[in-house]
Image (tube, rainbow, N blue to C red):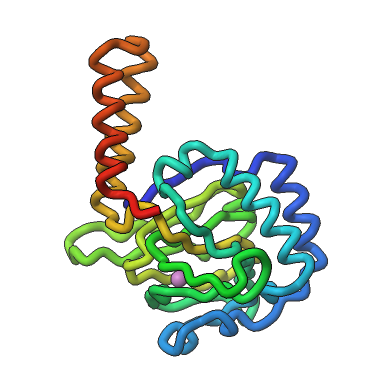
Length: 233
Ligand code: NI
C-alpha cells in the first residue's frame, strides 16, 4: 500500500527541523547503502551518530507518535531511527534499488536491534516548488500500471512497501531535503495491513455518520479480531 499522510510535521516542528538542518554536516549518503544500492546512490546524508541527527530524530518520532493515521496504516512495531538526506548539485539522485530487508540500528535507544523493513517512509522537508526533479518513483510489478511519482508538500509523508524497486529522480534546481526511515510492522504482510487499514477507515466513517450502533460495535470487534489474528508483537 502506498499512502500519503499530510502534515505529519506541523509548522512549528517543520521550522525547527529546517533551522537545525541549516547547519547540518552533510556526508556521503552511501554509508547506509547496501552493495547494490551503493552503486546508484548519489546523495548526501547526516551522520547517524551526530548530536544534530539525534535531535532531529526526536522531532520526527514525536510527530509520528501523535499521528493516528500513521499508526493505523503502518501498525508500527519497531521504527528504525529516522535519517536525513539532501539531494542537490552534483549529489542529486538515487537510481533504482530495493531497501535492505533487515537493518541493524547502530546508535541511540535502538542500538543493537534489528528491524525488518516492511514499510519505507519519506518525510518531505522542502516545499516542492523550490526545487525541480526529486520525485520518488515507485516501480510497479505490473508494467501496465502507472508508476507513482511522489513529490509532496513539506511536512507530508509517504509510506510504501519496502519490497518495491524505487528511485529518486535527479534534482536539477534547488535542494530536496527529506527524512527517511523504515519500520517493522506488527502485521508483516502488506495485503493484510491494507485490509485492516481499509476496514478501520470504513468503521471510522460509519461511526461519524451513525454513532456507535450495535453493528458498528460488532464490526469494530471484527477489526480487532483480525488484528489479533495477524499481529506479531
Ligand atoms: Ni530506498
